[in-house]
View 1 (cartoon, rainbow, N blue to C red):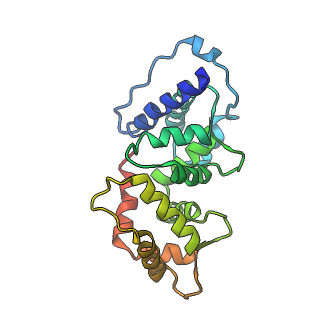
View 2 (cartoon, rainbow, N blue to C red):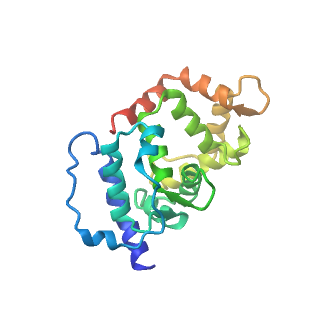
View 3 (cartoon, rainbow, N blue to C red):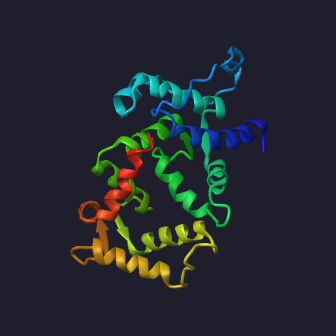
Length: 225
């Protein structure tokens, strides 16, 4: 692993932890020496003004986010392998690689095999400050692996298995071998209103809005920033 990639991997872990402090007032803007501007950058956003218009962050917040993203990952992009290595550090007792693959694809909206600052901040804006519908639509797109507008039982099974693999064998209480199938069956019983074997975006949003637990989990995002 190159020095830049190694710095990117370890730095982004610290950066992810600092995101939660951004607007709470506990993140103090670091002084950056001019020599950091000499870092090799493979990608730079065209400007923060378009992102201010497209996201729910103001200019000052975007500057802090970009400073952290650039300083900790000078190349300006994160590839899937680096993303998996970062994500796996948060789940040491399991295998997070498959779920990280699906999550990476959800961030990589341009399908070019990398996550740029624009991709990162657009997703962050939805998850932290988007409307309920925007958050649910983003989650639907995560589950809709082939992006055909429907969630199938096969796709949901792949996601659920990936989550169980990520949690690892130390999950409490211990998971039964048929747990993924039970989870998927319960999901479709609730979501698939017309019983056609797939879940549409409208069905997904409607069912989630009627579930108090899901609504509470979405509100947790609002307290992060």
